[in-house]
Length: 428
Image 1 (cartoon, rainbow, N blue to C red):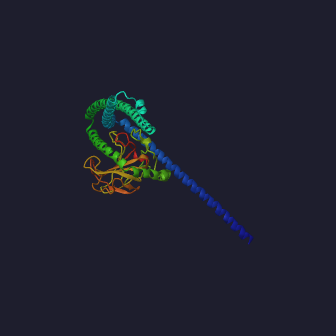
Image 2 (tube, rainbow, N blue to C red):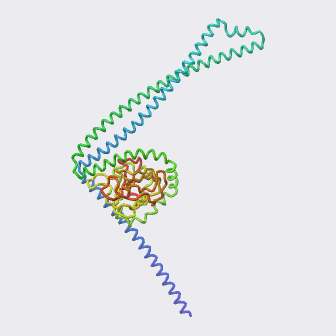
Image 3 (tube, one colour):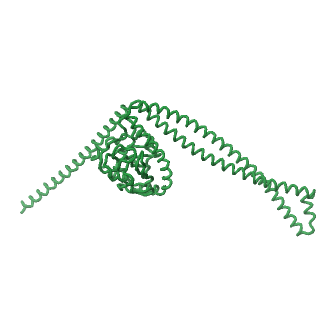
């Protein structure tokens, strides 16, 4: 019996040792797995950086100059738009100052006429003084009454003089405001003329450089220009839409504050399996200095907009020109999903440029653009709040497209075509 007990104890000790060994092996295995995943991600990152460096070195000098001139043109156009706004505001301000001056002068004229009438009445009354008027009182009641009347007259005279003086000051102030406004207007118009001249010069230089491009480069440049032009108009409409849907966007931002850290880190363990698809995750933002304007960053913030299809074009064209988006080669009719919770701020069906597209505003300052969808397939509307993974349209071949695919952009404030399109892979 004693021997049986010892055997049981021995078996228990062996079982405990084996269990601990298995636990240690499992821990070590998981640790090694994570290290391998991290190593793979670092390797992909390095390869992407090397690829970007190689692409940039291969850029022809002409393509570089065209890109630089395009960015200059965007900057000049932005300055002109700002100056146009200033000029419009100054014209309004001048109109208000003129109206204010006109009213002040009318009031001044009326008060001046009243003062003249008062002076005439006083003159016609002769040399009778206030004291004579009081001394002529026949009783104490009459005296008090006359004193009250004289006090009222004197007070009214004083108020009238003060009012006239105040109106004079208002007139002078309105004149100064008007003069300042006109000077500012003249300065703004001169600045606009100067920037417009610079814009025309830059466009002329750009046309000369474009003429030197190869045929393939010209075709890509034409595609870029069409998207740039369309984007400029869309951007203006989006600014207005952001104001219209400010309440929804604010609610989205408030909701995101509570779970931003969980959302950002929650998908970190999925990176190893997607390492090849995400190669280039650190390739960057195409020179954008606005990345910091987004409050949200890091892996897992966005999901792929389509569940299938490889990347057929990344952030740079083969020529080295900046594409600023990812193209997914997927068949027509493939469901396109919202990359994160957001508010739809723009949808349209164009026959050129972006074709059928959707723009979504996300928490933290990110914007996503989905383009070249199937015409009529959009199943969301502006102002609607959508969830991560929700179907928003079907992919297609609309607009300026060379084949069925989804064009996917991520933008940061101020969301312009030039300088604000960043690599979506930084957020997957």
